[in-house]
Length: 328
Ligand SMILES: NC(=O)c1ccc[n+]([C@@H]2O[C@H](COP(=O)([O-])OP(=O)(O)OC[C@H]3O[C@@H](n4cnc5c(N)ncnc54)[C@H](OP(=O)(O)O)[C@@H]3O)[C@@H](O)[C@H]2O)c1
Image (cartoon, rainbow, N blue to C red):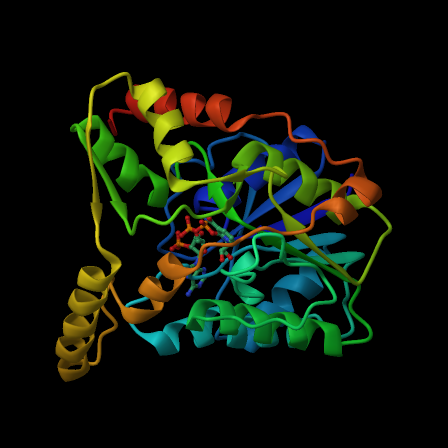
């Protein structure tokens, strides 16, 4: 039985990766920290590996002891209270981890990056899109830290790797889209800015399927954007969620200028205590970016990727899950 280590296994994407890996009859190690929740890691066949990415010796011992065939490095920070944290977790930890693997390389090291590593395509050219050979231009620290990690991986000639760049991932256990659904459930349909965005989205079950396909394949040293191949305005996402929630809502748009002003004030305030507020100017820059189209043709060619879930189906299943779990 082949051994796979999945880091960040306690989180949203990680816990789904674990389930998909177990379905593929792999010997699965959930890479977690001492403090991580095991709520979604209850399968009796699952094994655990406690990771401390700051401690090179313990990392080295772990990979030497286990000789993993595959590693999916999914642990990462999507939101952070300090900008430095993005660099520490999304970049430094990748360097520490890959250094520990020197001499004990798995058959594949899959890195979960993000569309944000390339930044958005042009706002003013609706046909513009992101593709592998394009020069990446991340517009926030999160994206910059992911890009730096990608560049580091590419610089290592001995480690067979694959880079996965998902767009917005939605599904059961996700907390980010959930904030939007929660408001809809209360009858509030709030959007920031009025101009329609072209969002690249992927249902978590489709994402983890293709991540495992890429990890187990013999294709190496490639990067892939992942979306369901369609693009959605923020209103289409809202419509799918409203249909599943089944409640009447009042729709309104908060002007981007107002949000920018609030974000600026919060940043000034945050400077005093060294914290990066949840609403910040980088977030506003992302909201102002309209075009997140990306090329998934390489996924189709290499793995015959076909999303099994439409936006309506995926959102409906998610809402059902949030209800069942008492979140909604
Ligand atoms: N969700 C999306 O829309 C999306 C889109 C593109 C890319 N991604 C990428 O997908 C990956 C997973 O994201 P997610 O949405 O599943 O986020 P999540 O639910 O917040 O999960 C993050 C995971 O990373 C672990 N982690 C965070 N900081 C860590 C640290 N200092 N040391 C060790 N482990 C740490 C967390 O462990 P604890 O539980 O112990 O905190 C958790 O297991 C990330 O790399 C993210 O950049 C996500």
